[in-house]
Structure formats: structure tokens, C-alpha cells
Length: 252
Length: 245
Image (cartoon, rainbow over all chains, first blue to last red; front, side, top):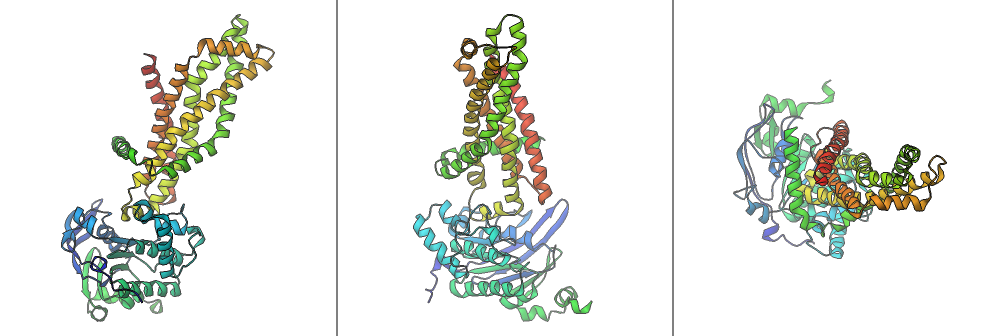
């Protein structure tokens, strides 16, 4: 049985205020406002090209907004206080594992590079995190030997090593078969239950969104159309949302 | 172009600031150094051996005809250590190692591995650029020392074996010792150090600014090699001018 997370392990709140971003004259984010509660699974859903991944890159600090701000526990994301005090991790759409490193080295990279633990301790933590994502004993495999689903699970293990208070997932089930997608969804849910991490999931996978989300934001053309619980979103009488939710091969 | 130059100056400055972290990154420096040596030593020996041989073949008969056969060793030795070894080896390394650096860092950029490093608060300059810059800055001068020695041997072999030159190994060596001083070798090695920094900087920069997919990586590799070669030739003129004083 897992111990209850301590205060510095618990999820953090995220506030996004008036976020705008323009690339080459095209406004990709048009003034986004929303709030994510500590420990919540918040899914941002929308069609491809709606600005979801750009938003995620802002939330992890890889991009800076033209205007607006992102606050973690009420403090600006770029502030040294947030950098030093809170731990955030991102699971990239491709996994973004370092191809020149073995699985174990990828998972332990954060600890090794920052010299936070001795090598034996890192090896123990790596084995533990890989077991959590169901990949026990794969330390010596290279990323090229793994399937797409396994790569994403390794990426989750790599994120877990940081003991994050906020995990961002970029299209975690894209390019996965339904079984692997379910495993990833279960992983997201179990992390919430075990360590109360705040999870922000960007996806256009409706099954994933309605399966794991506490709340869902639907984004379209750089604007948020609605925010609510899965049930509220499902019954929102907005034609754009309904069109997205009801898109089905059977209608072809 | 000016943006590229500005970015490279910033990258160079940040790499210099990161130099105290070299010991922490020593394993990566060693891996890169091994890669440079392992990938290039044989090519360096073949290339420099034949360059020495060709210089001897071109100049030897002319000097013998004019009765100054004793100068062959000096001509071969001087041209190899001050000019041909540093420039040719730098061009070889730009093609062999610079292209690999640009491709590796470029693909890491395209496939979000560099973003992943940033999210883990790992500075890509410390993790990727520093070990490569340090390794190439040590590796190329070492290879140039090999190239000078093998080039001299290649020249000596032709002088001994070619009937149109036919001077003894001792005569070749004596001519070489008359002309080439230790500062001439140091001059060539110093040039190669500057070329190495230039190749490393251009290649790492091109890798870091790669955009797009595989086509973008290909473009970066081409730019890294072409820009490195142009820079080597320009720097060669400037260094030759400065070091002549």
C-alpha cells in the first residue's frame, strides 16, 4: 500500500489568464482563461491544429506567451520561486526518449544529471518506476526496441522519477492500439489516486477524455468553447462541440 | 546570416561559461573524443600520407633538377605542418564529425528530445554542446599531430623510392630539420585548434536550429559542412596573416 503523499508531493493549482500567442502573423492562442485545481485531471480536447500542443508548451515553460500569464499556485511559471519550489514533468506525444540512451538511462537521466542520488539508488528508483508502468526489467533495452505504447510508458516513468506535482501529457494515446491506450489511461488515473498529482492532458481522443477527466475544456481555433465535467460537456448545446463529439466513421 | 553569426557568438559565450562543468561531463567528452578518433584516425593517416607523397612527387623532381635536392624535406615538412595538415584535417573532420554532430543534435531537436531535456531542467548546452566542443577541440589537434608525422613519412617514402628524386631518408630528415622548427608545428596545431572550435560551433548551432522533419535535418547537415569549410578557409587566411608577425 502506498503512503499518502506529503505536502510537497501533492498536486499544484494552475491558472491561465488571457494567454495569447501569434506565430508568423497567425494568432494560435486567442486569450485563454482557465484554472486547474490541485490533484485534478483536466483534459484539453479539440481538433488537430486548435492550439492544444502550443498551449501545453506554454504550460511547461518551453514557449513564452505574447500576452497573458500562467500561474502555478498563484506564482508566475517563469519565476525562480516556481522553478525551485515545484516539480513539473511532461510526457511528449512521441515519448521523446533520448535514442542514444538505454531505457534505464532515460528514466534515471534527471537524477543522474542533477546528481541527486548515488548510482545504486538511481538504479533502484529506475527499477521501481519501470515496475509502476509495467515495464519491469527493460532497463537495458534501447528505445528503438520498444513499441509506441512502451515508449510512452517509459516517458511516464521518466516523468515519475521527478516526483512531479504537475504532469502534462501531450496526446498520450495517439498512434496507440486500443489496448495500449487503455493501459495509458489507467496509468493516468492511478497516478492521480496514488500521488494526487495534477494532470493536464491534451488529446483529441474522446474515449480517453471522457474516461479519465475530472473536467474537460474544449478548445477550437485557439479559443476555449466550454469547460465542465464530462457530462456537462457531452450535453453542451454548442454546434462546434457537438460536431467534434459526434464525428463518426459510421456517418460516412 | 547576421542572425546566425549572433546566435553562434551567444552559443560560444554560453559554452565558454559552461567550461567549468567539463569534469562533470567527462564521460560524454571521452565518448565523443573516442568517436572522433575512432571514426577519423584511419582516414587521417591515409589522407595525410598521400598528401605528403603528392607534395614530394610534385616538388621533388623540380628541386632535384635545380640541384637543391636537400630542400625537398624542408618543402614537404613545412607545407604539411603549417598548412596542409591543419586545413585538410579540419575539412575532413567537418565532413565526418561536424555533419554527425549537426545530424544528431538536429534529430534530437526535431524529435523533441531537446525539449524533453529542458523540461527536466537539463541545459542542452551543458549536455550536448559542451562535450562535443571540448572533444573536437582536443581531438582535431591530436589528429593533426598524427597527420603531420604520417604526411612527413609519406613524403619521405616517395623521396626514397622515386628514382627521379632518389634521396636518402637521412637527407630528407636533415632537410626537414633545417627548415621546420618546433614553433612551426605548434603553429599548425594552434590553427587546427581554432578550426576545431569553428567546426564544433557551426555544427552544434546548425543542429540546435534545425526545423522540420528529416528534410530539415538534411538541410542542417549540408549547411554545417559547407559553412564549416568556408569558415576554415577564411580563418586560415586570417590566422596565417596574424601568425606571420
